[in-house]
Image (cartoon, rainbow, N blue to C red; front, side):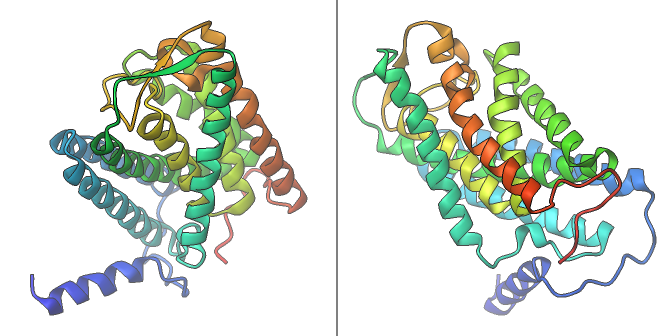
Length: 303
C-alpha cells in the first residue's frame, strides 16, 4: 500500500467518528431495519473476531495484532452503520476524552476484580501454581481488548440503544443485561447461575455506566480491565471458559462455589455481585439525577 493510499484510508476512517453534523439518510429506513440491521452486522463482526482469535492462537504477537484489528475494525463498522442508518454523529464513540475514559475504565475494572479476588483470598479460596508467563499475559491482553470492544459495541451500543427506544431506559437495562448473561451460556462450563450473575454484575453495571455517560469508552475500559485482571493477571477462569491461555500466573480456586464461583470462575461468586453492585448503584443514581433515564420512544440525542 502506498503512503498516499494509507493516508487516504486513515482520513476516511477518522471521518467515521467526526462529530460534525451528518446528512440524513437518503431514504427513511423502517424501524425493524434501523434497529435490527446493526444487531446482525455486529453479530457477524463477533463471529469474524472469533475466527481471527482462533488463527492467532496463543501467539502473543499475533494476539496483540488480532486484538487491535478486531477493536479498530469493530468500531469502524459500528460507526459506518450508525451514520448510514441513523444519519447522526457517532457521539458514543467521540474521540474527545476517549483515552481518559478508557484509562479510567480500565483502572476501575482492574480494581473491581482485584477487590473481588482479595475477598476470596481472605477466606483461603485462591492460590497460584507454577511460574510466571509474560507471553500468556500479552496473549490475553490482545484477546480481552477485542472481546471488550466488540461485546460493548453489540450490547451497549446496539442492543441497549434499540431496546431503549422500544422500552425506555429501565427496560433496556433489564433486557440487555439478561441477554448479555444469556450469551455467556454458550461458553464451555457455563451455568445458569453464572449467566444470571454475569447479567447482574456485568450487564446491569455496564448498562448503568453507559446510561449515565452516553459514551462507550468507559464501559469498554471497565469490561477490559475486569477481564484482563481475571485472566491475564490472576489466571482464573473467565465465564466458564477454562480453555483460554494461562495468564501471568496460573490461579487455582478452591472452596464453596458461593465464594469462588466454582467452575464458572469468580464472576459467579456472591462476592463479585456485591462488589459490582456498588458502581451499578452509583451510576444509576447519576443517570437519574441527570435526567438520562428516558421513557419509551425517546431516542438518544445526537449532541
